[in-house]
Image (cartoon, rainbow, N blue to C red):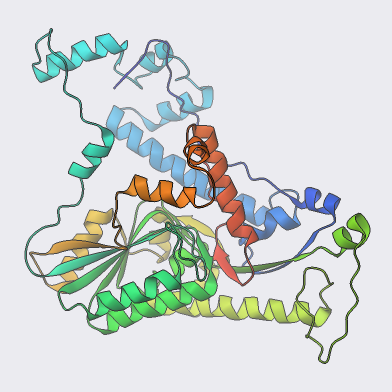
Amino acid sequence: MFINPQGGVDLKGYGASIPFFKNMLDKVGVEMNIFYAGNFKSATEPFRLTEMSEFNRLQTKDFLTDMKNIMVEKIAKSRKMEAAKIEGIMTNYDGRNGKLALANGLVDGLYYKDEFEDFLKRKTGTEADKKIKYISLSKYNGLADIDEGEGKDKIAIINAEGEIIYGSDELGIISEKRYIEMLTKIRNDKKIKAVVLRVNSPGGNAFSSDVIWRELEKIKESGKPVIASFGDYAASGGYYIAAGADMIVAQPNTLTGSIGVFMMFPNATKLMNEKIGVTFDTIKTHPFATGFSPFLNLSDKEKELLQESTMDIYDLFIDRVSKGRKLSIDSTKVIAQGRVWTGKKAKEIGLVDELGNLDDAIKIAADKAGIQTYKIVEYPTIKEDFISTIIKEIQKGQGGEEAIKLFSTKDERKLYEQYQSLKGILRCKEPNARLPFIFDFN
């Protein structure tokens, strides 16, 4: 491992910084009516508090510490160092320049690019006057893809990537609209002998999550084993859809669980009445005829009904997890509460069965199905190359040049991701089961 002499290793532990919007909303005259189930369900905190609750502070510190420990363990093993030394490096930021990084064993040498290429030529037996043949990351990624295998039997990989949004037809989004037809097709395909549900989702709409869960149950009922494989996130609705799987496989640092539900309903009466000068008067035939409007105060009865709906969905979520993971209702309630766990801790408490990657999940699926030779088929299918598809989707909303500029720098990409995450929170018109934000760990 080498870095430029003027470079450094940015090794300083994990941190999370969460924005809070309550003061801003108060200033503009908007109050958020919030209903939630689970003490650790922190998705609503930025809209009702000005700092983290003690519950959220506890869970965030716990999973950051877990992730840090996993990272330290991996670095210690690969660099042949003591964990205590790595902790010291992070505490003192002792990889901040090339000399320190080398002295502390984080790298093996300080090379300029030409020196690094000389090293590669020696390692590959390339003559000094010849150019090194490189391969692009995109091409390498294609060559390193999952081996599709042989035989007439198939294992289907269902990619559940992105937020869960009701009725959406967007790429990179999970919705019942896109997935029901696909899951039905998989269930009826006699050549598909097993399913691997690859989840990388912070969750989202509770209704859509339950519909997708039901379709996966029907696949199980047809005799095909369903194995869940977790990526970066399998939280809230993302965990919900996988809760009934025959087996769940997660990475040690997968953000897992967050079994809880929330609903947010804005009250903009102060904004409209006092800031803008717009008032509303109503006539109605029944008590709720004009209710649930952001321009009218919620009555106590309306608040009661919304909290009741939230609790009903939470109880259903608990039931799905309890039956799927073969846990008692009481023990499930203890580990639920909207709390986020790492994959490592989730295995200890029964939310995950095995630690491993996608390949491990595929092997388990093959074993459960009793097949040795098989082909891999992936869903949803993309009919054109990925980059072209993404650019086309972006261009639907803005000009081509501006769309490409949007992703021209790391900061712009980060802003776009934060915007998408906030948009997902604000489109909450129904009960949701999702993480508060996609944490950008530093």
